[in-house]
Length: 390
Image (cartoon, rainbow, N blue to C red):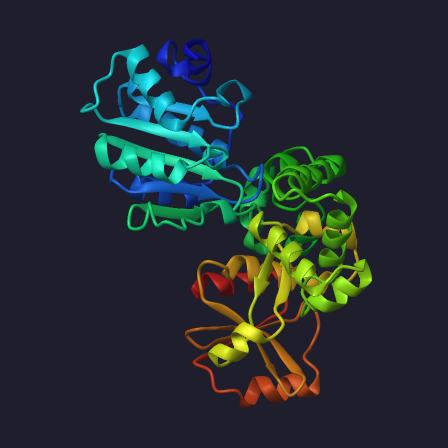
Protein backbone atom coordinates (compact mmCIF):
# COMPACT_ATOMS: atom_id res chain seq x y z
CA UNK A 1 0.00 0.00 0.00
CA UNK A 2 2.87 2.40 0.74
CA UNK A 3 3.94 2.69 -2.88
CA UNK A 4 0.34 3.29 -3.97
CA UNK A 5 -0.17 6.07 -1.44
CA UNK A 6 2.99 7.81 -2.62
CA UNK A 7 1.65 7.60 -6.19
CA UNK A 8 -1.63 9.19 -5.13
CA UNK A 9 0.14 11.91 -3.16
CA UNK A 10 3.07 13.21 -5.24
CA UNK A 11 3.24 16.39 -3.09
CA UNK A 12 4.82 14.33 -0.30
CA UNK A 13 8.06 14.20 -2.30
CA UNK A 14 8.00 16.94 -4.93
CA UNK A 15 6.49 20.29 -5.88
CA UNK A 16 2.84 19.93 -6.84
CA UNK A 17 1.80 21.69 -10.01
CA UNK A 18 -1.59 21.54 -11.69
CA UNK A 19 -1.31 22.40 -15.38
CA UNK A 20 -4.12 22.82 -17.87
CA UNK A 21 -6.79 22.77 -15.16
CA UNK A 22 -9.49 25.44 -15.21
CA UNK A 23 -11.02 26.54 -11.94
CA UNK A 24 -14.72 26.55 -11.09
CA UNK A 25 -14.84 29.45 -8.70
CA UNK A 26 -18.46 28.92 -7.58
CA UNK A 27 -17.66 25.51 -6.10
CA UNK A 28 -14.22 26.46 -4.82
CA UNK A 29 -15.82 29.28 -2.83
CA UNK A 30 -18.18 26.80 -1.18
CA UNK A 31 -15.30 24.48 -0.36
CA UNK A 32 -13.22 27.31 1.10
CA UNK A 33 -16.12 28.29 3.35
CA UNK A 34 -16.10 24.87 5.00
CA UNK A 35 -12.48 23.73 4.76
CA UNK A 36 -11.50 24.80 8.29
CA UNK A 37 -14.62 23.67 10.17
CA UNK A 38 -15.14 20.15 11.48
CA UNK A 39 -17.95 19.07 9.11
CA UNK A 40 -17.40 16.27 6.62
CA UNK A 41 -17.72 17.62 3.08
CA UNK A 42 -19.36 15.44 0.43
CA UNK A 43 -19.09 16.37 -3.26
CA UNK A 44 -21.74 14.60 -5.32
CA UNK A 45 -22.81 14.69 -8.95
CA UNK A 46 -22.51 12.95 -12.30
CA UNK A 47 -19.49 10.83 -13.08
CA UNK A 48 -16.74 12.95 -14.70
CA UNK A 49 -18.43 16.23 -13.80
CA UNK A 50 -15.21 17.47 -12.21
CA UNK A 51 -15.39 16.41 -8.55
CA UNK A 52 -11.85 15.00 -8.53
CA UNK A 53 -10.49 18.13 -10.22
CA UNK A 54 -12.08 20.30 -7.52
CA UNK A 55 -10.43 18.14 -4.87
CA UNK A 56 -7.03 18.52 -6.54
CA UNK A 57 -7.50 22.29 -6.78
CA UNK A 58 -8.38 22.45 -3.09
CA UNK A 59 -5.30 20.40 -2.22
CA UNK A 60 -3.16 22.83 -4.25
CA UNK A 61 -4.67 25.76 -2.32
CA UNK A 62 -3.87 24.09 1.00
CA UNK A 63 -0.27 23.51 -0.11
CA UNK A 64 0.02 27.13 -1.26
CA UNK A 65 -1.18 28.19 2.22
CA UNK A 66 1.77 26.28 3.68
CA UNK A 67 -0.20 23.37 5.13
CA UNK A 68 2.34 20.57 5.78
CA UNK A 69 2.16 18.45 2.62
CA UNK A 70 2.44 15.24 4.64
CA UNK A 71 -0.77 16.18 6.49
CA UNK A 72 -2.74 15.86 3.22
CA UNK A 73 -3.90 12.41 2.11
CA UNK A 74 -5.71 11.76 -1.17
CA UNK A 75 -6.87 8.29 -2.21
CA UNK A 76 -9.38 6.91 -4.72
CA UNK A 77 -11.33 4.22 -2.90
CA UNK A 78 -12.48 2.46 -6.07
CA UNK A 79 -8.87 1.38 -6.66
CA UNK A 80 -8.70 -2.38 -7.10
CA UNK A 81 -5.51 -2.63 -5.04
CA UNK A 82 -7.39 -1.26 -2.02
CA UNK A 83 -10.37 -3.61 -2.35
CA UNK A 84 -9.44 -5.54 0.82
CA UNK A 85 -8.70 -2.50 2.98
CA UNK A 86 -11.32 -0.46 4.78
CA UNK A 87 -11.04 3.30 5.27
CA UNK A 88 -9.76 3.05 8.86
CA UNK A 89 -6.98 0.69 7.79
CA UNK A 90 -5.91 3.00 4.97
CA UNK A 91 -5.71 6.00 7.32
CA UNK A 92 -3.82 4.03 9.95
CA UNK A 93 -1.32 2.88 7.33
CA UNK A 94 -0.92 6.48 6.13
CA UNK A 95 -0.21 7.72 9.67
CA UNK A 96 2.25 4.88 10.21
CA UNK A 97 4.14 5.49 6.94
CA UNK A 98 4.55 9.23 7.59
CA UNK A 99 4.82 8.92 11.40
CA UNK A 100 1.82 11.16 12.11
CA UNK A 101 0.16 10.95 15.53
CA UNK A 102 -3.61 10.87 16.01
CA UNK A 103 -3.66 14.30 17.65
CA UNK A 104 -2.03 15.95 14.63
CA UNK A 105 -4.60 17.42 12.25
CA UNK A 106 -4.73 15.86 8.80
CA UNK A 107 -6.81 16.53 5.70
CA UNK A 108 -8.30 13.34 4.27
CA UNK A 109 -9.58 13.35 0.68
CA UNK A 110 -11.55 10.21 -0.26
CA UNK A 111 -12.61 9.89 -3.91
CA UNK A 112 -15.63 7.62 -4.54
CA UNK A 113 -15.96 6.93 -0.81
CA UNK A 114 -19.18 4.95 -1.29
CA UNK A 115 -17.23 2.07 -2.84
CA UNK A 116 -16.38 1.03 0.71
CA UNK A 117 -18.90 -0.89 2.79
CA UNK A 118 -19.95 0.77 6.06
CA UNK A 119 -18.21 3.97 5.00
CA UNK A 120 -20.62 6.10 7.09
CA UNK A 121 -19.66 4.31 10.29
CA UNK A 122 -15.96 4.52 9.47
CA UNK A 123 -16.14 8.24 8.68
CA UNK A 124 -18.03 8.80 11.95
CA UNK A 125 -15.27 6.95 13.79
CA UNK A 126 -12.60 9.14 12.19
CA UNK A 127 -14.66 12.29 12.81
CA UNK A 128 -15.29 11.49 16.48
CA UNK A 129 -11.88 10.18 17.53
CA UNK A 130 -9.30 11.85 15.29
CA UNK A 131 -8.19 15.38 14.46
CA UNK A 132 -9.27 15.28 10.82
CA UNK A 133 -10.96 17.23 8.07
CA UNK A 134 -12.68 14.84 5.66
CA UNK A 135 -13.62 15.68 2.07
CA UNK A 136 -15.22 12.86 0.07
CA UNK A 137 -16.93 12.32 -3.28
CA UNK A 138 -19.70 10.08 -4.59
CA UNK A 139 -21.38 9.67 -7.98
CA UNK A 140 -24.62 8.27 -6.56
CA UNK A 141 -27.06 10.08 -4.29
CA UNK A 142 -28.67 6.82 -3.14
CA UNK A 143 -25.41 5.66 -1.57
CA UNK A 144 -25.26 8.83 0.51
CA UNK A 145 -28.51 7.91 2.26
CA UNK A 146 -27.50 7.36 5.86
CA UNK A 147 -30.16 4.96 7.17
CA UNK A 148 -28.60 4.70 10.62
CA UNK A 149 -27.88 8.44 10.80
CA UNK A 150 -24.18 7.96 11.53
CA UNK A 151 -23.32 11.30 9.93
CA UNK A 152 -26.37 13.35 10.90
CA UNK A 153 -25.19 16.80 11.91
CA UNK A 154 -21.67 15.98 10.80
CA UNK A 155 -21.88 16.34 7.01
CA UNK A 156 -22.41 19.00 4.35
CA UNK A 157 -23.35 17.89 0.82
CA UNK A 158 -22.47 19.95 -2.27
CA UNK A 159 -23.79 18.83 -5.65
CA UNK A 160 -21.42 19.62 -8.51
CA UNK A 161 -23.32 20.27 -11.74
CA UNK A 162 -22.11 20.37 -15.34
CA UNK A 163 -20.76 23.72 -16.55
CA UNK A 164 -23.39 26.39 -16.98
CA UNK A 165 -23.34 28.61 -20.07
CA UNK A 166 -21.08 31.24 -18.49
CA UNK A 167 -18.59 28.58 -17.37
CA UNK A 168 -18.78 26.99 -20.82
CA UNK A 169 -17.76 30.26 -22.47
CA UNK A 170 -14.94 30.66 -19.95
CA UNK A 171 -13.63 27.12 -20.56
CA UNK A 172 -13.70 27.86 -24.29
CA UNK A 173 -11.83 31.12 -23.79
CA UNK A 174 -14.74 33.06 -25.30
CA UNK A 175 -15.46 36.60 -24.14
CA UNK A 176 -18.55 38.35 -25.53
CA UNK A 177 -18.67 42.14 -25.33
CA UNK A 178 -21.96 43.91 -24.61
CA UNK A 179 -22.06 45.35 -28.11
CA UNK A 180 -21.73 41.81 -29.49
CA UNK A 181 -24.49 40.21 -27.39
CA UNK A 182 -26.11 38.99 -30.60
CA UNK A 183 -23.40 36.29 -30.66
CA UNK A 184 -24.78 34.69 -27.51
CA UNK A 185 -27.58 32.90 -29.36
CA UNK A 186 -25.10 31.17 -31.64
CA UNK A 187 -22.79 30.19 -28.78
CA UNK A 188 -25.76 28.87 -26.80
CA UNK A 189 -26.59 26.51 -29.65
CA UNK A 190 -22.99 25.25 -29.51
CA UNK A 191 -23.47 24.77 -25.76
CA UNK A 192 -26.61 22.73 -26.38
CA UNK A 193 -24.71 20.38 -28.70
CA UNK A 194 -21.64 19.98 -26.47
CA UNK A 195 -23.20 20.27 -23.01
CA UNK A 196 -21.33 21.08 -19.82
CA UNK A 197 -19.21 18.03 -19.00
CA UNK A 198 -15.78 19.67 -18.59
CA UNK A 199 -13.68 17.18 -20.58
CA UNK A 200 -16.17 17.17 -23.43
CA UNK A 201 -16.23 20.98 -23.53
CA UNK A 202 -12.45 21.06 -23.94
CA UNK A 203 -12.44 18.25 -26.54
CA UNK A 204 -16.00 17.76 -27.90
CA UNK A 205 -16.59 14.14 -28.82
CA UNK A 206 -19.93 12.38 -29.23
CA UNK A 207 -18.29 9.06 -28.37
CA UNK A 208 -17.06 10.46 -25.04
CA UNK A 209 -20.62 11.23 -23.92
CA UNK A 210 -21.95 7.89 -25.17
CA UNK A 211 -19.22 6.07 -23.24
CA UNK A 212 -20.06 8.10 -20.14
CA UNK A 213 -23.73 7.09 -20.32
CA UNK A 214 -22.84 3.43 -20.90
CA UNK A 215 -20.39 3.57 -17.99
CA UNK A 216 -23.04 4.90 -15.61
CA UNK A 217 -25.69 2.43 -16.81
CA UNK A 218 -23.33 -0.55 -16.59
CA UNK A 219 -21.50 0.23 -13.33
CA UNK A 220 -23.89 2.33 -11.25
CA UNK A 221 -27.22 0.90 -12.37
CA UNK A 222 -27.04 -2.53 -14.02
CA UNK A 223 -24.16 -4.02 -11.99
CA UNK A 224 -24.90 -2.28 -8.69
CA UNK A 225 -28.59 -3.23 -8.66
CA UNK A 226 -28.04 -6.67 -10.19
CA UNK A 227 -30.18 -6.02 -13.28
CA UNK A 228 -30.11 -8.78 -15.86
CA UNK A 229 -31.06 -6.78 -18.95
CA UNK A 230 -28.70 -3.92 -19.78
CA UNK A 231 -30.67 -3.06 -22.93
CA UNK A 232 -33.89 -2.30 -21.06
CA UNK A 233 -31.99 0.20 -18.91
CA UNK A 234 -30.56 1.86 -22.01
CA UNK A 235 -33.95 1.93 -23.76
CA UNK A 236 -35.50 3.39 -20.63
CA UNK A 237 -32.97 6.22 -20.62
CA UNK A 238 -33.61 6.91 -24.31
CA UNK A 239 -37.33 7.32 -23.55
CA UNK A 240 -36.52 9.65 -20.64
CA UNK A 241 -34.44 11.91 -22.87
CA UNK A 242 -37.16 12.02 -25.53
CA UNK A 243 -39.63 13.13 -22.85
CA UNK A 244 -37.38 15.64 -21.07
CA UNK A 245 -39.21 18.88 -20.34
CA UNK A 246 -42.55 17.08 -20.18
CA UNK A 247 -44.70 15.50 -17.50
CA UNK A 248 -43.61 11.90 -17.18
CA UNK A 249 -45.93 8.89 -17.09
CA UNK A 250 -44.18 5.96 -15.43
CA UNK A 251 -46.98 3.64 -16.57
CA UNK A 252 -46.67 4.62 -20.25
CA UNK A 253 -42.93 3.97 -20.28
CA UNK A 254 -43.57 0.65 -18.53
CA UNK A 255 -46.10 -0.31 -21.21
CA UNK A 256 -43.69 0.55 -24.04
CA UNK A 257 -40.91 -1.55 -22.50
CA UNK A 258 -43.30 -4.27 -21.24
CA UNK A 259 -42.26 -3.86 -17.61
CA UNK A 260 -44.47 -3.37 -14.55
CA UNK A 261 -45.25 0.09 -13.12
CA UNK A 262 -43.20 -0.77 -10.01
CA UNK A 263 -40.21 -1.80 -12.14
CA UNK A 264 -40.60 1.37 -14.20
CA UNK A 265 -40.60 3.46 -11.03
CA UNK A 266 -37.43 1.74 -9.80
CA UNK A 267 -35.64 2.39 -13.09
CA UNK A 268 -36.58 6.06 -12.92
CA UNK A 269 -35.10 6.28 -9.41
CA UNK A 270 -31.88 4.63 -10.62
CA UNK A 271 -31.38 7.36 -13.23
CA UNK A 272 -32.28 10.09 -10.74
CA UNK A 273 -29.87 8.71 -8.12
CA UNK A 274 -26.97 8.68 -10.61
CA UNK A 275 -27.71 12.34 -11.53
CA UNK A 276 -28.53 11.59 -15.18
CA UNK A 277 -32.02 13.06 -14.83
CA UNK A 278 -33.76 15.55 -12.55
CA UNK A 279 -37.42 15.54 -11.49
CA UNK A 280 -39.61 18.60 -10.92
CA UNK A 281 -42.78 18.25 -8.79
CA UNK A 282 -46.08 20.00 -9.39
CA UNK A 283 -47.09 23.05 -7.36
CA UNK A 284 -49.97 22.47 -4.98
CA UNK A 285 -50.99 21.01 -1.66
CA UNK A 286 -48.70 18.34 -0.23
CA UNK A 287 -50.86 15.53 -1.59
CA UNK A 288 -50.88 17.00 -5.11
CA UNK A 289 -47.13 17.55 -5.06
CA UNK A 290 -46.45 13.96 -3.99
CA UNK A 291 -48.95 12.18 -6.24
CA UNK A 292 -48.99 14.28 -9.43
CA UNK A 293 -46.78 13.45 -12.41
CA UNK A 294 -43.35 15.04 -12.27
CA UNK A 295 -41.63 16.83 -15.12
CA UNK A 296 -38.30 15.40 -16.17
CA UNK A 297 -35.14 17.25 -17.19
CA UNK A 298 -31.73 16.14 -18.40
CA UNK A 299 -28.80 16.92 -16.09
CA UNK A 300 -26.67 17.86 -19.09
CA UNK A 301 -27.85 19.38 -22.36
CA UNK A 302 -25.15 17.62 -24.37
CA UNK A 303 -26.39 14.23 -23.18
CA UNK A 304 -29.94 15.17 -24.13
CA UNK A 305 -28.71 16.28 -27.56
CA UNK A 306 -27.33 12.80 -28.25
CA UNK A 307 -30.87 11.44 -28.16
CA UNK A 308 -33.00 14.38 -29.32
CA UNK A 309 -30.80 16.35 -31.73
CA UNK A 310 -31.88 19.78 -32.95
CA UNK A 311 -35.55 19.06 -32.32
CA UNK A 312 -37.31 21.71 -30.19
CA UNK A 313 -34.55 24.15 -29.14
CA UNK A 314 -37.06 25.72 -26.76
CA UNK A 315 -37.06 22.57 -24.61
CA UNK A 316 -33.27 22.89 -24.16
CA UNK A 317 -33.73 26.50 -23.09
CA UNK A 318 -36.34 25.50 -20.50
CA UNK A 319 -34.09 22.64 -19.33
CA UNK A 320 -31.22 25.10 -18.88
CA UNK A 321 -33.36 27.49 -16.82
CA UNK A 322 -34.31 24.59 -14.57
CA UNK A 323 -30.65 23.64 -14.05
CA UNK A 324 -29.74 27.25 -13.21
CA UNK A 325 -32.48 27.50 -10.60
CA UNK A 326 -32.07 24.03 -9.11
CA UNK A 327 -30.49 24.07 -5.64
CA UNK A 328 -30.99 27.83 -5.44
CA UNK A 329 -34.78 27.74 -5.09
CA UNK A 330 -37.47 25.27 -4.06
CA UNK A 331 -38.90 24.79 -7.53
CA UNK A 332 -42.16 23.44 -8.98
CA UNK A 333 -44.19 23.60 -12.19
CA UNK A 334 -47.63 25.19 -12.20
CA UNK A 335 -50.50 23.23 -13.76
CA UNK A 336 -54.11 24.34 -13.65
CA UNK A 337 -57.05 23.25 -15.84
CA UNK A 338 -54.81 21.70 -18.47
CA UNK A 339 -52.54 24.75 -18.73
CA UNK A 340 -48.92 24.85 -17.60
CA UNK A 341 -46.46 27.54 -16.58
CA UNK A 342 -42.90 26.23 -16.50
CA UNK A 343 -41.73 27.20 -13.00
CA UNK A 344 -42.93 28.61 -9.73
CA UNK A 345 -40.66 29.01 -6.72
CA UNK A 346 -41.65 28.50 -3.09
CA UNK A 347 -41.23 32.25 -2.56
CA UNK A 348 -43.84 32.85 -5.28
CA UNK A 349 -41.84 33.84 -8.34
CA UNK A 350 -43.50 32.72 -11.57
CA UNK A 351 -41.16 31.99 -14.49
CA UNK A 352 -42.08 31.05 -18.06
CA UNK A 353 -39.50 29.96 -20.63
CA UNK A 354 -40.36 31.07 -24.18
CA UNK A 355 -37.32 30.81 -26.40
CA UNK A 356 -38.04 33.18 -29.31
CA UNK A 357 -41.75 32.43 -28.96
CA UNK A 358 -44.89 33.62 -27.17
CA UNK A 359 -47.42 32.23 -24.72
CA UNK A 360 -50.71 30.94 -26.09
CA UNK A 361 -53.97 32.51 -24.90
CA UNK A 362 -54.58 30.03 -22.07
CA UNK A 363 -51.03 30.36 -20.77
CA UNK A 364 -51.21 34.13 -20.90
CA UNK A 365 -54.48 34.11 -18.96
CA UNK A 366 -53.05 31.85 -16.22
CA UNK A 367 -49.82 33.86 -16.12
CA UNK A 368 -51.70 37.15 -15.67
CA UNK A 369 -54.30 35.92 -13.19
CA UNK A 370 -52.12 33.78 -10.94
CA UNK A 371 -51.15 35.63 -7.76
CA UNK A 372 -47.35 35.80 -7.48
CA UNK A 373 -44.80 38.11 -5.89
CA UNK A 374 -42.95 38.45 -9.19
CA UNK A 375 -43.43 37.24 -12.77
CA UNK A 376 -40.76 36.77 -15.42
CA UNK A 377 -40.85 35.64 -19.05
CA UNK A 378 -37.42 34.60 -20.35
CA UNK A 379 -37.46 34.54 -24.13
CA UNK A 380 -33.81 34.85 -25.19
CA UNK A 381 -30.28 33.99 -24.06
CA UNK A 382 -29.70 37.65 -23.17
CA UNK A 383 -32.63 37.44 -20.74
CA UNK A 384 -30.94 34.63 -18.77
CA UNK A 385 -29.17 37.24 -16.66
CA UNK A 386 -32.55 37.82 -14.98
CA UNK A 387 -32.03 34.49 -13.22
CA UNK A 388 -29.01 35.89 -11.39
CA UNK A 389 -31.30 38.42 -9.67
CA UNK A 390 -33.46 35.72 -8.08
